[in-house]
Length: 151
Image (cartoon, rainbow, N blue to C red; front, side):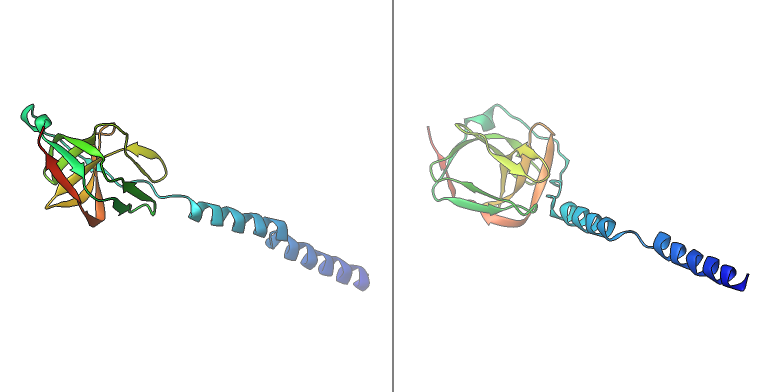
């Protein structure tokens, strides 16, 4: 009888040990999912914005005189090619929102967003997102290598 009790006790301990620990394949799955979740792009930060649109501002046009490389806060990079032309779409407290005239400019995080560069103090300070009606600030401002073009 003592042998039977000992066998039951040892078996219960072994079963308890295995129930408390997930099987090795589960640990591998958890690690893979954790890595995949950390590899996802972050969402583009944005805040509500009220754009002031005036008829007179649409008459102003700008052109990029030297290629502009932009490192987005989401980790992605964008470039604006030399010769790209913009028209003033409106004004924000942060600066002028410039709409590309012959192309579509986007920024990317977890999703793609149509974006108009916002110029303040001769630097790109962020982007106006027309669909979301929001402003997405840029942590590292980039020199705006543009000049106003008279038509």
